[in-house]
Amino acid sequence: MAPSRTPRRRPSRAETRRKIIDAAGEVFARQGIAATSLNDIAAAAGLTKGAVYSNFEGRDDLVLTIMEEHIVERMRSATTAFDELSDLGEATAEAGARLAAGVDTDATWHRLLLEYWGIAMRNPAVHKGLALRRAQLRDAITAAVARAATQHGVELPLPPEQLAVVVLALSNGLAVERGVEASAVPDSLFADVLKLLVTPRGISGSAEPPDSPAPPGTAGR
Image (cartoon, rainbow, N blue to C red; front, top):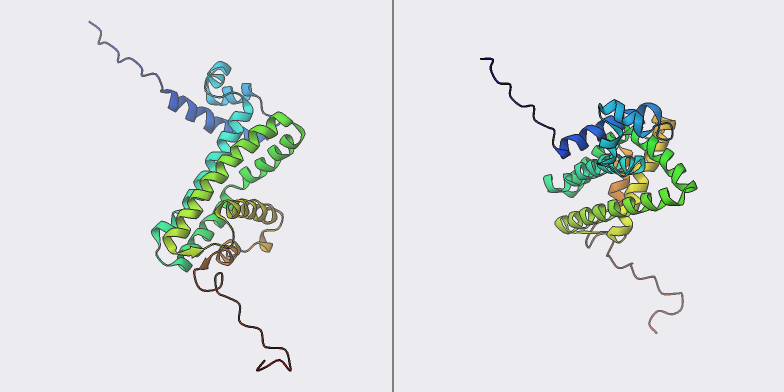
Protein backbone atom coordinates (compact mmCIF):
# COMPACT_ATOMS: atom_id res chain seq x y z
CA MET A 1 0.00 0.00 0.00
CA ALA A 2 1.47 3.32 -1.06
CA PRO A 3 2.10 5.77 1.79
CA SER A 4 -0.47 8.53 2.01
CA ARG A 5 0.69 11.97 1.04
CA THR A 6 0.51 14.79 3.53
CA PRO A 7 -2.04 17.31 2.27
CA ARG A 8 -0.43 20.51 1.08
CA ARG A 9 -1.31 23.33 3.43
CA ARG A 10 -3.07 26.21 1.77
CA PRO A 11 -1.38 29.53 2.42
CA SER A 12 -3.22 31.77 4.84
CA ARG A 13 -4.77 35.02 3.73
CA ALA A 14 -2.00 36.90 5.54
CA GLU A 15 0.67 34.89 3.71
CA THR A 16 -0.99 35.50 0.35
CA ARG A 17 -1.29 39.19 1.09
CA ARG A 18 2.38 39.34 2.06
CA LYS A 19 3.34 37.58 -1.15
CA ILE A 20 1.39 40.10 -3.22
CA ILE A 21 2.92 43.07 -1.37
CA ASP A 22 6.46 41.78 -1.84
CA ALA A 23 5.90 41.05 -5.53
CA ALA A 24 4.27 44.43 -6.12
CA GLY A 25 7.15 46.20 -4.42
CA GLU A 26 9.66 44.54 -6.72
CA VAL A 27 7.65 45.33 -9.86
CA PHE A 28 6.99 48.95 -8.87
CA ALA A 29 10.68 49.44 -8.13
CA ARG A 30 11.65 47.99 -11.49
CA GLN A 31 8.98 49.48 -13.77
CA GLY A 32 7.51 52.43 -11.90
CA ILE A 33 3.90 52.76 -10.82
CA ALA A 34 2.25 54.03 -13.99
CA ALA A 35 3.78 51.26 -16.12
CA THR A 36 2.69 48.46 -13.78
CA SER A 37 -0.59 46.57 -14.14
CA LEU A 38 -2.28 44.14 -11.77
CA ASN A 39 -1.50 41.41 -14.29
CA ASP A 40 2.21 42.21 -13.87
CA ILE A 41 1.89 41.96 -10.10
CA ALA A 42 -0.13 38.74 -10.22
CA ALA A 43 2.43 37.13 -12.53
CA ALA A 44 5.32 38.17 -10.28
CA ALA A 45 3.52 36.71 -7.26
CA GLY A 46 2.60 33.49 -9.07
CA LEU A 47 -1.09 34.17 -8.46
CA THR A 48 -4.16 35.05 -10.45
CA LYS A 49 -5.42 38.58 -10.90
CA GLY A 50 -8.48 37.52 -8.93
CA ALA A 51 -6.28 36.62 -5.97
CA VAL A 52 -4.84 40.13 -6.03
CA TYR A 53 -8.31 41.66 -6.14
CA SER A 54 -9.46 39.48 -3.25
CA ASN A 55 -6.81 41.10 -1.04
CA PHE A 56 -6.57 44.65 -2.42
CA GLU A 57 -9.02 47.04 -4.02
CA GLY A 58 -6.60 47.72 -6.86
CA ARG A 59 -3.20 49.11 -7.76
CA ASP A 60 -3.66 52.30 -5.74
CA ASP A 61 -4.47 50.32 -2.60
CA LEU A 62 -1.29 48.31 -3.12
CA VAL A 63 0.87 51.39 -3.70
CA LEU A 64 -0.40 53.08 -0.55
CA THR A 65 -0.06 49.94 1.55
CA ILE A 66 3.56 49.42 0.51
CA MET A 67 4.53 53.05 1.05
CA GLU A 68 2.80 53.11 4.42
CA GLU A 69 4.70 50.00 5.52
CA HIS A 70 8.04 51.55 4.64
CA ILE A 71 7.33 54.89 6.29
CA VAL A 72 5.79 53.42 9.45
CA GLU A 73 8.78 51.11 9.91
CA ARG A 74 11.24 53.99 9.47
CA MET A 75 9.40 56.19 11.94
CA ARG A 76 8.98 53.31 14.41
CA SER A 77 12.71 52.63 14.29
CA ALA A 78 13.47 56.31 14.88
CA THR A 79 11.00 56.92 17.70
CA THR A 80 12.04 53.80 19.62
CA ALA A 81 15.43 55.48 20.09
CA PHE A 82 13.70 57.69 22.66
CA ASP A 83 12.53 54.56 24.51
CA GLU A 84 15.95 52.92 24.41
CA LEU A 85 18.13 55.88 25.44
CA SER A 86 17.54 58.02 28.52
CA ASP A 87 19.77 60.91 27.46
CA LEU A 88 17.82 63.28 25.22
CA GLY A 89 20.83 64.32 23.14
CA GLU A 90 21.90 60.73 22.51
CA ALA A 91 18.34 59.66 21.70
CA THR A 92 17.89 62.54 19.25
CA ALA A 93 21.20 61.78 17.54
CA GLU A 94 20.30 58.10 17.24
CA ALA A 95 16.82 58.87 15.89
CA GLY A 96 18.35 61.19 13.32
CA ALA A 97 20.93 58.57 12.33
CA ARG A 98 18.21 55.97 11.80
CA LEU A 99 16.14 58.32 9.68
CA ALA A 100 19.20 59.31 7.67
CA ALA A 101 20.02 55.65 7.02
CA GLY A 102 16.50 55.16 5.72
CA VAL A 103 16.96 57.94 3.19
CA ASP A 104 19.46 55.74 1.37
CA THR A 105 17.89 52.32 1.91
CA ASP A 106 14.42 53.60 0.96
CA ALA A 107 15.56 55.76 -1.96
CA THR A 108 13.36 53.76 -4.34
CA TRP A 109 10.28 54.45 -2.24
CA HIS A 110 10.93 58.15 -2.07
CA ARG A 111 11.14 58.12 -5.85
CA LEU A 112 7.87 56.20 -6.09
CA LEU A 113 6.24 58.60 -3.64
CA LEU A 114 7.14 61.49 -5.93
CA GLU A 115 5.73 59.60 -8.91
CA TYR A 116 2.52 58.81 -7.05
CA TRP A 117 2.22 62.38 -5.79
CA GLY A 118 2.30 63.53 -9.43
CA ILE A 119 -0.43 61.03 -10.31
CA ALA A 120 -2.55 62.14 -7.35
CA MET A 121 -2.31 65.81 -8.27
CA ARG A 122 -3.98 65.00 -11.60
CA ASN A 123 -6.55 62.50 -10.33
CA PRO A 124 -9.02 63.58 -7.61
CA ALA A 125 -9.90 59.99 -6.66
CA VAL A 126 -6.25 59.03 -6.20
CA HIS A 127 -5.63 62.30 -4.34
CA LYS A 128 -8.41 61.47 -1.88
CA GLY A 129 -6.93 58.07 -1.10
CA LEU A 130 -3.42 59.45 -0.70
CA ALA A 131 -4.64 62.25 1.58
CA LEU A 132 -6.48 59.75 3.80
CA ARG A 133 -3.47 57.46 4.20
CA ARG A 134 -1.11 60.36 4.86
CA ALA A 135 -3.49 61.69 7.52
CA GLN A 136 -3.44 58.30 9.24
CA LEU A 137 0.34 58.27 9.06
CA ARG A 138 0.58 61.77 10.55
CA ASP A 139 -1.68 60.67 13.40
CA ALA A 140 0.65 57.77 14.20
CA ILE A 141 3.72 60.02 14.13
CA THR A 142 1.93 62.64 16.23
CA ALA A 143 1.26 60.07 18.95
CA ALA A 144 4.89 58.90 18.89
CA VAL A 145 6.22 62.47 19.08
CA ALA A 146 3.90 63.35 21.97
CA ARG A 147 4.93 60.21 23.88
CA ALA A 148 8.64 60.90 23.39
CA ALA A 149 8.22 64.53 24.48
CA THR A 150 6.43 63.52 27.67
CA GLN A 151 8.92 60.76 28.45
CA HIS A 152 11.95 63.05 28.13
CA GLY A 153 10.41 66.22 29.54
CA VAL A 154 10.66 68.08 26.26
CA GLU A 155 8.72 71.22 25.50
CA LEU A 156 8.22 71.13 21.75
CA PRO A 157 8.40 74.35 19.70
CA LEU A 158 5.29 73.26 17.79
CA PRO A 159 2.22 71.14 18.59
CA PRO A 160 2.96 67.43 18.01
CA GLU A 161 0.62 67.25 15.02
CA GLN A 162 2.48 70.09 13.30
CA LEU A 163 5.87 68.65 14.20
CA ALA A 164 4.79 65.37 12.59
CA VAL A 165 4.27 67.23 9.32
CA VAL A 166 7.70 68.84 9.66
CA VAL A 167 9.39 65.47 10.24
CA LEU A 168 7.69 63.96 7.19
CA ALA A 169 8.57 66.96 5.04
CA LEU A 170 12.15 66.88 6.31
CA SER A 171 12.47 63.19 5.50
CA ASN A 172 11.06 63.59 2.00
CA GLY A 173 12.95 66.78 1.24
CA LEU A 174 16.33 65.50 2.37
CA ALA A 175 15.77 62.30 0.39
CA VAL A 176 15.17 64.32 -2.77
CA GLU A 177 18.22 66.52 -2.23
CA ARG A 178 20.44 63.57 -1.33
CA GLY A 179 19.27 61.75 -4.43
CA VAL A 180 20.31 64.72 -6.57
CA GLU A 181 23.62 65.40 -4.81
CA ALA A 182 24.57 63.11 -1.93
CA SER A 183 27.44 65.33 -0.76
CA ALA A 184 25.01 68.18 -0.09
CA VAL A 185 23.21 66.16 2.60
CA PRO A 186 25.72 64.79 5.15
CA ASP A 187 24.68 61.88 7.37
CA SER A 188 24.56 64.12 10.44
CA LEU A 189 22.16 66.68 8.96
CA PHE A 190 18.97 64.92 9.98
CA ALA A 191 20.13 64.59 13.59
CA ASP A 192 21.32 68.21 13.68
CA VAL A 193 17.91 69.46 12.54
CA LEU A 194 16.05 67.21 14.98
CA LYS A 195 18.11 68.67 17.83
CA LEU A 196 16.88 72.11 16.83
CA LEU A 197 13.30 70.88 17.05
CA VAL A 198 13.43 69.66 20.65
CA THR A 199 13.90 72.03 23.57
CA PRO A 200 14.22 70.81 27.18
CA ARG A 201 11.66 72.49 29.41
CA GLY A 202 12.89 75.54 31.18
CA ILE A 203 15.91 76.10 28.95
CA SER A 204 15.39 77.91 25.66
CA GLY A 205 11.80 77.29 24.71
CA SER A 206 10.09 78.40 27.91
CA ALA A 207 12.46 80.98 29.36
CA GLU A 208 11.22 84.52 29.65
CA PRO A 209 13.13 87.01 27.54
CA PRO A 210 15.51 89.22 29.51
CA ASP A 211 14.26 92.65 30.54
CA SER A 212 15.12 95.33 28.04
CA PRO A 213 17.28 98.16 29.39
CA ALA A 214 15.34 101.27 30.29
CA PRO A 215 15.45 104.04 27.70
CA PRO A 216 17.94 106.83 28.51
CA GLY A 217 16.55 109.37 30.92
CA THR A 218 13.82 107.11 32.34
CA ALA A 219 15.77 105.41 35.14
CA GLY A 220 14.34 105.97 38.60
CA ARG A 221 10.92 107.09 37.39
